[in-house]
Amino acid sequence: MSIRTYKDAIDRLNTLQSNAATLEAVRASGGRQSEFAIPEMVEYLERIGYKQEDLNKLNVIHVAGTKGKGSTSAFANSILHHVKPDWKIAVRERIRINGTSLSEEEFAKYFFEVWDRLEMNDVRKFPQTPAKPAYFRYVTLVAFHTFLTLKVDATILEAGVGGTYDSTNIVPKPIVTGVSALGIDHTAVLGKTLPEIAWQKGGIYKEGVPALTVNQPEEALSVLKQQSIDRKASEFSVIPETPELADIKLGLAGVHQVQNANLAVHLARKFLQTQDGFQPTAQLPKSFIAGLENARWPGRCQIVADPRYHNTTWFLDGAHTTESLDCCTRWFVSPEAALRPTTGKRRQRILIFNCTSGRNGSSFLGTVLSNAAAQLKLYGSDEERDSFFTHVIFCTNVTYADGGFKGGTDIDLTVKNDLAHLKTQQDLATAWSSLVPSFPTQSIHVLPSIEHAIGLIRELASTRDGDGDTNVDVLVSGSLHLVGGVIEVAGLSDVAL
Image (cartoon, helix red, strand yellow):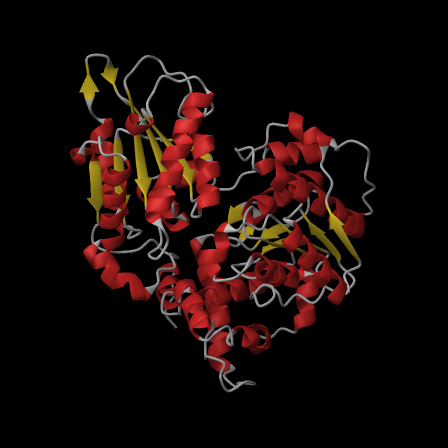
Protein backbone atom coordinates (compact mmCIF):
# COMPACT_ATOMS: atom_id res chain seq x y z
CA MET A 1 0.00 0.00 0.00
CA SER A 2 1.34 3.45 -0.90
CA ILE A 3 2.00 5.89 1.93
CA ARG A 4 -1.00 8.09 2.61
CA THR A 5 0.01 11.65 3.41
CA TYR A 6 -1.38 14.54 5.44
CA LYS A 7 -2.67 16.04 2.19
CA ASP A 8 -4.48 12.78 1.45
CA ALA A 9 -6.08 12.95 4.90
CA ILE A 10 -7.20 16.54 4.42
CA ASP A 11 -8.60 15.77 0.98
CA ARG A 12 -10.69 12.98 2.52
CA LEU A 13 -11.71 15.16 5.46
CA ASN A 14 -12.95 17.90 3.16
CA THR A 15 -15.29 15.46 1.43
CA LEU A 16 -17.30 15.25 4.65
CA GLN A 17 -20.21 17.57 5.23
CA SER A 18 -19.05 20.78 6.89
CA ASN A 19 -20.18 22.16 10.22
CA ALA A 20 -22.02 25.01 8.50
CA ALA A 21 -23.94 22.57 6.32
CA THR A 22 -24.72 20.43 9.35
CA LEU A 23 -26.13 23.39 11.25
CA GLU A 24 -28.28 24.35 8.28
CA ALA A 25 -29.60 20.78 8.00
CA VAL A 26 -30.53 20.79 11.70
CA ARG A 27 -32.35 24.12 11.30
CA ALA A 28 -34.21 22.83 8.25
CA SER A 29 -35.29 19.69 10.12
CA GLY A 30 -36.68 21.73 13.00
CA GLY A 31 -34.12 20.14 15.28
CA ARG A 32 -35.22 16.56 14.58
CA GLN A 33 -31.70 15.60 13.48
CA SER A 34 -30.34 16.48 16.92
CA GLU A 35 -32.06 13.54 18.61
CA PHE A 36 -29.99 11.16 16.49
CA ALA A 37 -26.67 12.92 17.17
CA ILE A 38 -25.60 11.02 20.29
CA PRO A 39 -26.75 7.53 19.17
CA GLU A 40 -24.99 8.06 15.85
CA MET A 41 -21.77 9.23 17.51
CA VAL A 42 -21.80 6.19 19.80
CA GLU A 43 -22.33 4.00 16.74
CA TYR A 44 -19.27 5.55 15.04
CA LEU A 45 -17.21 5.06 18.20
CA GLU A 46 -18.17 1.38 18.35
CA ARG A 47 -17.40 0.92 14.66
CA ILE A 48 -13.81 2.04 15.26
CA GLY A 49 -13.43 -0.44 18.10
CA TYR A 50 -14.29 1.36 21.34
CA LYS A 51 -17.03 1.28 23.94
CA GLN A 52 -18.44 4.44 25.45
CA GLU A 53 -16.99 3.51 28.82
CA ASP A 54 -13.49 3.53 27.28
CA LEU A 55 -13.75 7.31 27.06
CA ASN A 56 -13.73 7.56 30.86
CA LYS A 57 -10.05 6.57 30.67
CA LEU A 58 -9.37 10.00 29.14
CA ASN A 59 -10.08 11.74 32.49
CA VAL A 60 -12.09 14.54 30.95
CA ILE A 61 -12.68 18.16 31.91
CA HIS A 62 -15.69 18.99 29.73
CA VAL A 63 -16.35 22.66 28.90
CA ALA A 64 -19.32 24.17 27.06
CA GLY A 65 -20.55 27.73 26.55
CA THR A 66 -21.09 30.33 23.85
CA LYS A 67 -18.25 32.62 24.96
CA GLY A 68 -14.95 31.85 26.60
CA LYS A 69 -14.94 28.05 26.48
CA GLY A 70 -11.79 28.02 24.35
CA SER A 71 -9.99 30.43 26.66
CA THR A 72 -11.15 28.46 29.70
CA SER A 73 -9.78 25.29 28.11
CA ALA A 74 -6.45 26.99 27.38
CA PHE A 75 -6.13 28.23 30.97
CA ALA A 76 -7.09 24.82 32.40
CA ASN A 77 -4.59 23.07 30.16
CA SER A 78 -1.79 25.42 31.21
CA ILE A 79 -2.63 25.09 34.92
CA LEU A 80 -2.55 21.28 34.77
CA HIS A 81 0.70 21.37 32.79
CA HIS A 82 2.37 23.53 35.45
CA VAL A 83 0.97 21.55 38.38
CA LYS A 84 1.73 18.14 36.85
CA PRO A 85 4.53 18.62 34.28
CA ASP A 86 5.03 14.85 33.99
CA TRP A 87 1.43 14.28 32.86
CA LYS A 88 0.40 13.84 29.25
CA ILE A 89 -2.38 16.42 28.82
CA ALA A 90 -4.59 16.44 25.73
CA VAL A 91 -6.79 19.18 24.29
CA ARG A 92 -9.38 18.29 21.64
CA GLU A 93 -9.14 21.70 19.96
CA ARG A 94 -6.60 21.15 17.13
CA ILE A 95 -5.80 17.75 18.76
CA ARG A 96 -2.96 19.01 20.95
CA ILE A 97 -0.77 17.01 23.33
CA ASN A 98 1.09 19.01 25.99
CA GLY A 99 0.43 22.19 24.05
CA THR A 100 1.69 20.91 20.71
CA SER A 101 -0.48 19.97 17.75
CA LEU A 102 0.03 16.57 16.17
CA SER A 103 2.60 16.56 13.40
CA GLU A 104 1.25 16.12 9.88
CA GLU A 105 2.58 12.55 9.86
CA GLU A 106 0.91 11.74 13.19
CA PHE A 107 -2.38 13.29 12.11
CA ALA A 108 -2.37 11.29 8.87
CA LYS A 109 -1.61 8.07 10.79
CA TYR A 110 -4.47 8.42 13.27
CA PHE A 111 -6.82 9.86 10.64
CA PHE A 112 -6.49 6.84 8.36
CA GLU A 113 -6.67 4.37 11.23
CA VAL A 114 -10.16 5.77 11.96
CA TRP A 115 -11.05 5.97 8.26
CA ASP A 116 -10.06 2.36 7.60
CA ARG A 117 -11.94 1.05 10.63
CA LEU A 118 -15.10 2.81 9.48
CA GLU A 119 -14.61 1.32 5.99
CA MET A 120 -14.12 -2.20 7.35
CA ASN A 121 -16.99 -2.03 9.87
CA ASP A 122 -19.86 -0.69 7.82
CA VAL A 123 -22.72 -2.46 9.62
CA ARG A 124 -25.20 0.21 10.76
CA LYS A 125 -27.19 0.06 13.96
CA PHE A 126 -29.41 2.90 12.75
CA PRO A 127 -30.42 2.94 9.07
CA GLN A 128 -30.27 6.75 8.85
CA THR A 129 -26.65 6.92 10.06
CA PRO A 130 -24.36 8.17 7.25
CA ALA A 131 -21.40 5.96 6.34
CA LYS A 132 -19.01 8.64 7.63
CA PRO A 133 -19.60 11.31 10.27
CA ALA A 134 -19.62 15.02 9.43
CA TYR A 135 -16.42 17.06 9.65
CA PHE A 136 -16.47 18.06 13.34
CA ARG A 137 -17.66 14.64 14.46
CA TYR A 138 -14.93 12.93 12.46
CA VAL A 139 -12.21 15.12 13.96
CA THR A 140 -13.64 14.37 17.41
CA LEU A 141 -13.42 10.64 16.65
CA VAL A 142 -9.79 11.07 15.57
CA ALA A 143 -9.11 12.96 18.81
CA PHE A 144 -10.67 10.23 20.94
CA HIS A 145 -8.72 7.53 19.08
CA THR A 146 -5.47 9.49 19.37
CA PHE A 147 -5.84 10.21 23.08
CA LEU A 148 -6.79 6.61 23.93
CA THR A 149 -3.87 5.27 21.91
CA LEU A 150 -1.43 7.61 23.66
CA LYS A 151 -2.94 6.89 27.10
CA VAL A 152 -3.18 10.54 28.15
CA ASP A 153 -3.48 11.49 31.82
CA ALA A 154 -6.01 14.30 31.33
CA THR A 155 -8.17 15.63 28.50
CA ILE A 156 -9.62 19.11 28.10
CA LEU A 157 -12.70 18.52 25.98
CA GLU A 158 -14.27 21.63 24.48
CA ALA A 159 -17.80 21.20 23.16
CA GLY A 160 -18.63 22.43 19.68
CA VAL A 161 -21.64 24.62 18.94
CA GLY A 162 -23.95 22.59 21.15
CA GLY A 163 -23.89 20.65 24.38
CA THR A 164 -26.67 18.13 24.88
CA TYR A 165 -26.38 16.79 21.34
CA ASP A 166 -22.73 17.71 20.76
CA SER A 167 -20.41 15.01 19.44
CA THR A 168 -18.13 15.46 22.45
CA ASN A 169 -21.01 14.64 24.80
CA ILE A 170 -20.65 10.85 24.70
CA VAL A 171 -18.16 10.61 27.58
CA PRO A 172 -20.21 8.78 30.25
CA LYS A 173 -18.44 10.21 33.29
CA PRO A 174 -16.09 13.19 33.00
CA ILE A 175 -14.14 14.22 36.10
CA VAL A 176 -15.71 17.71 36.15
CA THR A 177 -17.91 19.80 33.84
CA GLY A 178 -18.17 23.56 33.42
CA VAL A 179 -20.21 26.09 31.45
CA SER A 180 -18.62 29.39 30.46
CA ALA A 181 -20.57 32.57 29.67
CA LEU A 182 -23.80 32.26 27.69
CA GLY A 183 -24.21 35.27 25.44
CA ILE A 184 -27.39 36.54 23.85
CA ASP A 185 -25.37 37.30 20.72
CA HIS A 186 -25.54 33.61 19.80
CA THR A 187 -29.31 33.40 20.12
CA ALA A 188 -29.93 34.88 16.69
CA VAL A 189 -27.21 32.77 15.05
CA LEU A 190 -28.45 29.53 16.61
CA GLY A 191 -32.13 30.44 16.38
CA LYS A 192 -32.58 29.73 20.09
CA THR A 193 -33.64 31.68 23.16
CA LEU A 194 -31.22 32.07 26.04
CA PRO A 195 -33.01 29.44 28.20
CA GLU A 196 -32.89 27.03 25.24
CA ILE A 197 -29.17 27.62 24.83
CA ALA A 198 -28.69 27.11 28.58
CA TRP A 199 -30.53 23.80 28.30
CA GLN A 200 -28.19 22.75 25.47
CA LYS A 201 -25.02 23.71 27.33
CA GLY A 202 -26.22 22.18 30.61
CA GLY A 203 -26.56 18.92 28.73
CA ILE A 204 -22.89 18.20 29.43
CA TYR A 205 -23.66 17.81 33.15
CA LYS A 206 -23.48 14.17 34.21
CA GLU A 207 -24.64 11.94 37.06
CA GLY A 208 -22.21 11.96 39.96
CA VAL A 209 -20.02 14.66 38.38
CA PRO A 210 -19.52 18.23 39.70
CA ALA A 211 -21.39 20.79 37.57
CA LEU A 212 -19.84 24.26 37.54
CA THR A 213 -20.81 27.51 35.83
CA VAL A 214 -19.81 31.14 35.81
CA ASN A 215 -22.47 33.63 36.88
CA GLN A 216 -25.15 33.81 34.18
CA PRO A 217 -28.31 35.83 33.49
CA GLU A 218 -31.02 34.57 35.85
CA GLU A 219 -33.12 33.01 33.08
CA ALA A 220 -30.10 30.94 32.00
CA LEU A 221 -28.88 30.16 35.51
CA SER A 222 -32.19 28.62 36.58
CA VAL A 223 -32.14 26.32 33.54
CA LEU A 224 -28.55 25.23 34.22
CA LYS A 225 -29.43 24.46 37.83
CA GLN A 226 -32.42 22.39 36.75
CA GLN A 227 -30.24 20.52 34.25
CA SER A 228 -27.81 19.66 37.05
CA ILE A 229 -30.72 18.31 39.11
CA ASP A 230 -32.30 16.37 36.25
CA ARG A 231 -28.93 14.85 35.32
CA LYS A 232 -28.08 14.07 38.96
CA ALA A 233 -24.82 16.00 39.12
CA SER A 234 -22.94 15.51 42.41
CA GLU A 235 -23.07 19.27 43.00
CA PHE A 236 -24.03 22.50 41.24
CA SER A 237 -21.82 25.52 41.82
CA VAL A 238 -21.87 29.08 40.56
CA ILE A 239 -18.16 29.63 41.05
CA PRO A 240 -17.05 32.42 43.42
CA GLU A 241 -14.48 34.99 42.41
CA THR A 242 -10.77 34.36 42.95
CA PRO A 243 -9.40 37.65 44.35
CA GLU A 244 -5.78 36.97 43.32
CA LEU A 245 -6.74 37.10 39.64
CA ALA A 246 -6.87 40.89 39.84
CA ASP A 247 -3.09 40.96 40.39
CA ILE A 248 -2.06 38.32 37.83
CA LYS A 249 -1.00 39.24 34.30
CA LEU A 250 -2.91 36.56 32.44
CA GLY A 251 -1.34 34.90 29.43
CA LEU A 252 -4.47 35.66 27.39
CA ALA A 253 -5.14 39.36 26.98
CA GLY A 254 -8.40 41.20 27.67
CA VAL A 255 -10.37 42.02 30.80
CA HIS A 256 -12.99 39.45 29.80
CA GLN A 257 -10.42 36.69 30.34
CA VAL A 258 -10.60 37.05 34.13
CA GLN A 259 -13.94 35.20 34.18
CA ASN A 260 -12.55 32.44 31.95
CA ALA A 261 -9.41 32.12 34.08
CA ASN A 262 -11.57 31.89 37.20
CA LEU A 263 -13.62 29.03 35.74
CA ALA A 264 -10.39 27.25 34.76
CA VAL A 265 -9.04 27.60 38.30
CA HIS A 266 -12.14 25.98 39.78
CA LEU A 267 -12.23 23.22 37.15
CA ALA A 268 -8.55 22.44 37.73
CA ARG A 269 -9.04 22.37 41.51
CA LYS A 270 -11.91 19.90 41.26
CA PHE A 271 -10.00 17.77 38.77
CA LEU A 272 -6.83 17.62 40.87
CA GLN A 273 -8.79 16.89 44.04
CA THR A 274 -10.28 13.82 42.36
CA GLN A 275 -7.25 12.65 40.40
CA ASP A 276 -4.31 13.62 42.58
CA GLY A 277 -5.53 14.24 46.12
CA PHE A 278 -5.02 17.98 45.75
CA GLN A 279 -6.05 19.98 48.82
CA PRO A 280 -7.28 23.53 48.06
CA THR A 281 -5.48 26.32 49.92
CA ALA A 282 -6.58 29.80 50.89
CA GLN A 283 -4.31 31.30 48.25
CA LEU A 284 -3.61 30.18 44.70
CA PRO A 285 -0.55 27.91 44.54
CA LYS A 286 2.44 29.24 42.58
CA SER A 287 1.93 26.50 40.00
CA PHE A 288 -1.63 27.76 39.33
CA ILE A 289 -0.35 31.33 38.94
CA ALA A 290 2.39 30.20 36.56
CA GLY A 291 -0.20 28.31 34.51
CA LEU A 292 -2.42 31.37 34.25
CA GLU A 293 0.47 33.65 33.33
CA ASN A 294 1.79 31.31 30.65
CA ALA A 295 -1.49 30.25 29.06
CA ARG A 296 -1.52 30.51 25.29
CA TRP A 297 -4.30 30.15 22.77
CA PRO A 298 -3.35 30.86 19.15
CA GLY A 299 -5.63 33.30 17.37
CA ARG A 300 -7.23 34.91 20.41
CA CYS A 301 -6.01 38.37 21.49
CA GLN A 302 -2.58 37.29 20.29
CA ILE A 303 0.28 39.65 19.44
CA VAL A 304 2.85 38.22 17.01
CA ALA A 305 5.96 40.01 15.78
CA ASP A 306 6.58 39.08 12.16
CA PRO A 307 9.77 36.99 12.14
CA ARG A 308 10.88 38.21 8.70
CA TYR A 309 9.38 41.68 8.31
CA HIS A 310 10.51 43.38 11.48
CA ASN A 311 8.38 46.50 11.02
CA THR A 312 5.17 44.43 10.98
CA THR A 313 3.23 43.28 14.04
CA TRP A 314 0.19 41.01 13.80
CA PHE A 315 -2.76 41.23 16.17
CA LEU A 316 -4.78 38.04 15.80
CA ASP A 317 -8.26 37.49 17.17
CA GLY A 318 -10.81 35.25 15.48
CA ALA A 319 -13.72 37.07 17.15
CA HIS A 320 -16.89 36.28 15.19
CA THR A 321 -19.77 37.64 17.27
CA THR A 322 -20.70 41.17 18.27
CA GLU A 323 -19.76 40.43 21.88
CA SER A 324 -16.37 38.91 21.06
CA LEU A 325 -15.59 41.75 18.64
CA ASP A 326 -16.38 44.17 21.45
CA CYS A 327 -13.68 42.45 23.57
CA CYS A 328 -11.32 42.29 20.60
CA THR A 329 -11.53 46.01 19.88
CA ARG A 330 -11.11 46.98 23.52
CA TRP A 331 -7.95 44.87 23.58
CA PHE A 332 -6.57 46.20 20.28
CA VAL A 333 -7.26 49.89 20.94
CA SER A 334 -5.27 49.98 24.16
CA PRO A 335 -1.76 50.87 25.36
CA GLU A 336 -0.73 47.22 25.31
CA ALA A 337 -1.55 46.93 21.61
CA ALA A 338 -2.21 49.57 18.95
CA LEU A 339 -1.76 52.55 21.30
CA ARG A 340 1.66 51.41 22.56
CA PRO A 341 4.54 53.92 22.21
CA THR A 342 6.60 53.76 19.02
CA THR A 343 10.04 54.97 18.05
CA GLY A 344 8.76 57.94 16.07
CA LYS A 345 8.35 56.18 12.75
CA ARG A 346 5.15 56.58 10.82
CA ARG A 347 2.54 53.99 11.74
CA GLN A 348 -0.05 52.31 9.57
CA ARG A 349 -2.90 50.32 11.04
CA ILE A 350 -4.56 47.80 8.78
CA LEU A 351 -7.70 45.76 9.38
CA ILE A 352 -8.12 42.39 7.65
CA PHE A 353 -11.68 41.21 8.15
CA ASN A 354 -14.15 38.61 6.97
CA CYS A 355 -17.29 37.03 8.37
CA THR A 356 -19.45 34.06 7.57
CA SER A 357 -22.14 34.66 5.01
CA GLY A 358 -25.41 35.36 6.80
CA ARG A 359 -23.89 37.19 9.76
CA ASN A 360 -24.49 40.91 10.12
CA GLY A 361 -21.26 42.39 8.78
CA SER A 362 -22.48 45.96 9.11
CA SER A 363 -23.26 45.41 12.79
CA PHE A 364 -19.86 43.81 13.33
CA LEU A 365 -18.00 46.70 11.74
CA GLY A 366 -20.12 49.17 13.66
CA THR A 367 -19.04 47.44 16.87
CA VAL A 368 -15.38 47.77 15.87
CA LEU A 369 -15.73 51.48 15.09
CA SER A 370 -17.84 52.47 18.10
CA ASN A 371 -15.52 50.64 20.48
CA ALA A 372 -12.47 52.18 18.83
CA ALA A 373 -13.95 55.65 19.44
CA ALA A 374 -14.72 54.84 23.08
CA GLN A 375 -11.25 53.45 23.67
CA LEU A 376 -9.51 56.46 22.11
CA LYS A 377 -11.49 58.73 24.39
CA LEU A 378 -10.81 56.52 27.41
CA TYR A 379 -7.05 56.75 26.92
CA GLY A 380 -7.05 60.44 26.07
CA SER A 381 -5.84 59.94 22.51
CA ASP A 382 -6.24 62.78 20.02
CA GLU A 383 -6.68 60.30 17.18
CA GLU A 384 -10.02 60.12 15.39
CA ARG A 385 -12.08 56.96 14.99
CA ASP A 386 -12.56 57.45 11.26
CA SER A 387 -8.81 57.63 10.54
CA PHE A 388 -7.64 55.09 13.12
CA PHE A 389 -7.17 52.48 10.39
CA THR A 390 -5.23 53.56 7.32
CA HIS A 391 -6.41 50.61 5.22
CA VAL A 392 -9.15 47.98 5.52
CA ILE A 393 -9.00 44.68 3.65
CA PHE A 394 -12.04 42.48 3.18
CA CYS A 395 -10.94 39.11 1.81
CA THR A 396 -12.36 35.61 1.65
CA ASN A 397 -11.14 32.68 3.75
CA VAL A 398 -9.65 31.16 0.60
CA THR A 399 -6.01 30.70 1.53
CA TYR A 400 -4.12 30.89 -1.75
CA ALA A 401 -4.35 32.96 -4.91
CA ASP A 402 -4.98 29.80 -6.96
CA GLY A 403 -8.11 29.10 -4.93
CA GLY A 404 -6.61 26.47 -2.63
CA PHE A 405 -7.50 26.21 1.04
CA LYS A 406 -5.24 25.73 4.01
CA GLY A 407 -5.11 22.08 5.05
CA GLY A 408 -7.81 21.26 7.56
CA THR A 409 -9.95 24.32 6.86
CA ASP A 410 -13.65 23.51 7.09
CA ILE A 411 -15.29 25.41 4.22
CA ASP A 412 -18.99 25.01 3.55
CA LEU A 413 -19.30 23.91 -0.06
CA THR A 414 -22.56 25.84 -0.37
CA VAL A 415 -20.73 29.19 -0.20
CA LYS A 416 -18.53 28.59 -3.25
CA ASN A 417 -20.77 30.73 -5.42
CA ASP A 418 -20.61 33.51 -2.84
CA LEU A 419 -16.81 33.28 -2.85
CA ALA A 420 -16.69 33.43 -6.62
CA HIS A 421 -18.55 36.73 -6.64
CA LEU A 422 -17.01 38.11 -3.40
CA LYS A 423 -20.53 39.09 -2.34
CA THR A 424 -19.87 39.05 1.39
CA GLN A 425 -16.67 41.06 0.97
CA GLN A 426 -18.34 43.61 -1.31
CA ASP A 427 -21.13 43.99 1.24
CA LEU A 428 -18.55 44.57 3.99
CA ALA A 429 -16.82 47.23 1.89
CA THR A 430 -20.13 48.96 1.24
CA ALA A 431 -20.97 48.84 4.95
CA TRP A 432 -17.59 50.36 5.86
CA SER A 433 -18.05 53.20 3.38
CA SER A 434 -21.50 53.88 4.82
CA LEU A 435 -20.18 53.86 8.40
CA VAL A 436 -17.14 56.00 7.56
CA PRO A 437 -18.06 58.21 4.56
CA SER A 438 -14.76 60.13 4.81
CA PHE A 439 -12.63 56.99 4.48
CA PRO A 440 -10.60 57.04 1.22
CA THR A 441 -12.10 54.59 -1.26
CA GLN A 442 -8.62 53.67 -2.50
CA SER A 443 -7.83 52.40 0.98
CA ILE A 444 -10.77 49.95 1.03
CA HIS A 445 -9.68 46.66 -0.55
CA VAL A 446 -11.82 43.70 -1.61
CA LEU A 447 -9.57 40.72 -2.32
CA PRO A 448 -10.25 37.10 -3.38
CA SER A 449 -7.77 35.33 -1.09
CA ILE A 450 -5.65 35.61 2.03
CA GLU A 451 -2.53 35.38 -0.13
CA HIS A 452 -3.66 38.51 -1.99
CA ALA A 453 -4.16 40.27 1.35
CA ILE A 454 -0.70 39.31 2.63
CA GLY A 455 0.81 40.52 -0.63
CA LEU A 456 -0.81 43.92 -0.13
CA ILE A 457 0.39 44.05 3.49
CA ARG A 458 3.95 43.39 2.36
CA GLU A 459 3.66 46.12 -0.24
CA LEU A 460 2.32 48.64 2.27
CA ALA A 461 4.96 47.64 4.83
CA SER A 462 7.74 48.37 2.34
CA THR A 463 6.61 51.99 1.92
CA ARG A 464 9.24 54.47 3.07
CA ASP A 465 9.01 58.15 3.89
CA GLY A 466 11.39 60.76 5.19
CA ASP A 467 11.47 59.18 8.63
CA GLY A 468 12.40 55.74 7.34
CA ASP A 469 10.42 52.52 7.47
CA THR A 470 6.77 52.50 8.38
CA ASN A 471 5.56 50.53 11.41
CA VAL A 472 2.63 48.36 10.38
CA ASP A 473 0.08 46.99 12.85
CA VAL A 474 -2.33 44.46 11.32
CA LEU A 475 -5.52 43.44 13.12
CA VAL A 476 -6.96 40.17 11.73
CA SER A 477 -10.45 39.38 12.97
CA GLY A 478 -13.96 38.20 12.17
CA SER A 479 -13.15 34.55 11.54
CA LEU A 480 -10.91 31.88 13.07
CA HIS A 481 -10.48 30.39 9.60
CA LEU A 482 -9.19 33.75 8.40
CA VAL A 483 -6.72 33.93 11.29
CA GLY A 484 -5.52 30.38 10.59
CA GLY A 485 -4.97 31.18 6.93
CA VAL A 486 -3.04 34.37 7.76
CA ILE A 487 -0.77 32.44 10.14
CA GLU A 488 0.05 30.02 7.34
CA VAL A 489 0.47 32.43 4.42
CA ALA A 490 2.38 35.09 6.39
CA GLY A 491 4.80 32.45 7.70
CA LEU A 492 3.88 32.91 11.36
CA SER A 493 3.41 29.26 12.35
CA ASP A 494 6.69 28.91 14.25
CA VAL A 495 5.98 31.95 16.43
CA ALA A 496 2.17 31.87 16.63
CA LEU A 497 1.33 28.19 17.17
